Image 1: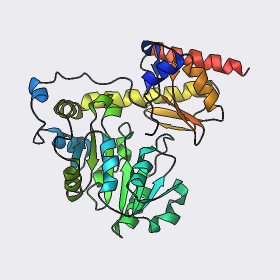
Image 2: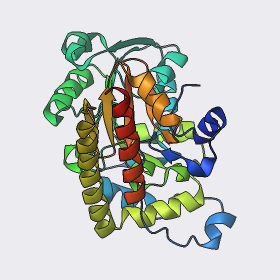
Image 3: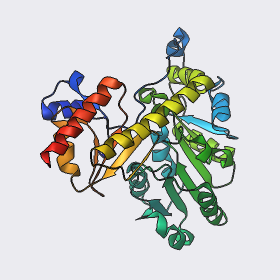
Image 4: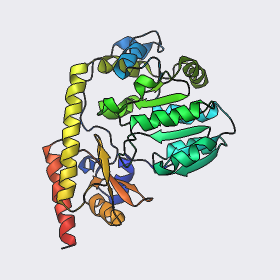
Length: 330
């Protein structure tokens, strides 16, 4: 399995620091969320029913013609490569590693390249995968460029798969309103923006025919009843979403300023994290981990991703450790 952020228990064991003493900045999940509604008893006792409000509420939230709820966007990442065979797949990298792994695992021919190489490669591809905003760089590909790539692929029966797991703070940049177009597949995560990663809920936005095919492949009861209920409630709460969006964007800007103040100016970022490419990434990762702050380390390129602190105590703790690290170079 690929390495991911959020492995706090493993870090606690490795560094000998109690679980409760960690500040986990490794995931890019919002550190604060929404008031969790009381889950009705029948959500636990009955099998999930797709005739509830979830799909309709999600269509309204994403401004999409058709959506399929899934058990986190990871479920779709793993299943989409099984719907077609023997394809030429392009993945704009670096990005979330599960995309390339899922297509490779199903025997497709895989090519990973930079965004700048897409125009030269796209006419030889059956599927192009883009993470937007990118994880970990935070890079946003302009909508017009994505739609141009989609048109070139769709004209030959190809797919453009766009993973928008970190898009919720900037919905105006989303391809969701275009997801009715043939060959366009948009993946959305519920857990990151709503701070409900444990609910394992996500959505696929695409033409209904493709969603029906994916639904059949995933099988019945793919999303748990309690997750369906919580998703229906929170996706309808526009006031809370607005407040969450404003707070995340402000805190992301604050994090960028804090890192810059300590001689670690971000190379990129989005509303849920900041990304610092530095040859000191291993040293900085270890320095912070030994003081109970977990970040997400990347080997290629050498870099760290910083999630957002949850409160003033956590902000001060991060600032203190960054100051101590800077003093080691003085």
